[in-house]
Length: 203
Image (tube, rainbow, N blue to C red; front, side, top):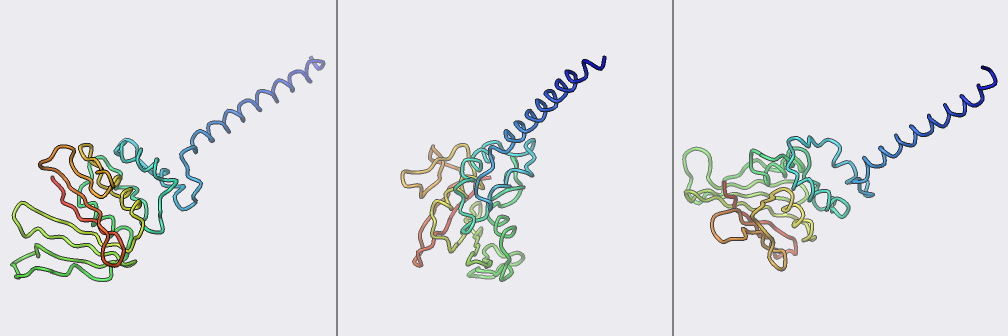
């Protein structure tokens, strides 16, 4: 029996090496979607794929390597949910930037109860305003200090993904393919050279 010991030890060593290689390969496979950019490399680690919108996840995976986090943080976590409840634009700002003011009414004539038009300022030069004074209509604006238009395009593509929307030729408007009711988004450069987003959301 002893004369077979070297052979048995050799087989055991080969078998262990094989399983270690398999383990290493599985680890490599599991990290292929990680960007080389350390600021965006961990975005996918805490996603509940059973609740996430697969289209949002796919878009974020596509954009992750080139995402400009210095301009706009990635919309991760709850913003990737299939059935997100709330106004994504405002919630995104609240989640990523400290507020400088509370909600300030911008109504021309004061109304009883909650103002139908208000504005709020955030750090890093961001502000958010909304107007729902006209019945059945609500408009939203996000003012930024971002000079990278592509960053706004990517944010809208993920945060406000709409299966029935598409971008126009210069990627300034994200609107329904067929004219009519729906959600409309517009990216415009302001007088200071920064990009702002104006939008209306249907449903």
